[in-house]
Length: 176
Ligand SMILES: O=P(O)(O)OC[C@H]1O[C@H](OP(=O)(O)OP(=O)(O)O)[C@H](O)[C@@H]1O
Ligand code: HPA
Image (tube, rainbow, N blue to C red; front, side, top):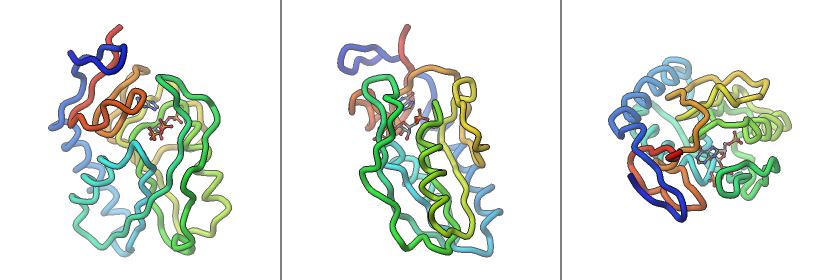
């Protein structure tokens, strides 16, 4: 068990399980984009570790760029998704694959779909390392999912509780 700020977390998903799930996702994305050079869009901050590992396994031509969105305070969504770093113009006419660390309420996905509907991209897909189907209430159907998880707050592998825990190579869940 580990402690971050005032809360305790217990081991949940190992680094090996995460790596195996990423390899499967990469194979699917590679097959879908075999004749193209996709631009991966890493959603900062949480997705930095996933995007890095995903790209290391992606052995075909690809590019990466970043957007920064934020809506969480502590363990809950404020419901307001702030854009801290916007989409670069270089994605025009290109095939993009969003790389997210976790899809929870769907507020962030909704914002991403809205941002990209104003840009003329060739193809638009979303890949998320973790996905909480019980709580997701969005209309967009997630294209690639690493691991489905129950509605529990998690940390590690890029995900934080008030900025702590991002450095953990595996995932922990809140101890209730
Ligand atoms: O489906 P949702 O309820 O919108 O939750 C998912 C989003 O929440 C987290 O971001 P956060 O706002 O915590 O910013 P961070 O990535 O910088 O930690 C996470 O990285 C996702 O982007
Ligand atoms: O379970 C979570 N953990 C950390 N950050 C998050 N942002 C949305 N859901 C989560």
